[in-house]
Image 1 (cartoon, one colour):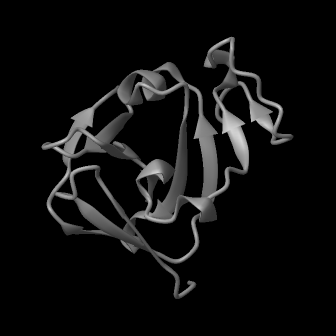
Image 2 (cartoon, rainbow, N blue to C red):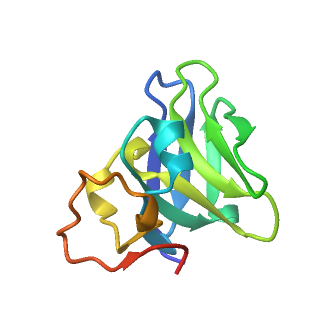
Length: 133
């Protein structure tokens, strides 16, 4: 594992976290759940091993957003911080927008593009997957 430490948190500063090492992947999700939970046309996530992520200040609140996943957010300001599978995954997806240095987390691909908003033109040359690849 790399010695890198990545920090981030919510808008109001009540929640802070650190992720150690390099992300497993970085992807932009266009599913309707991501759009509705964020109010944005898509979300970009950096996926880390669950045991490499620690919340160092405050405690996020979890909301079960579907049968298979929960989303973690700040109970004070509402910032969406992470997505996590309920079962069978040993990773956590942190929102790149919450990172202190988001420029270091360029997406590698787009997923759930079948649900993307039709006015968004994806011309960045990255692979596009209609569902989970």
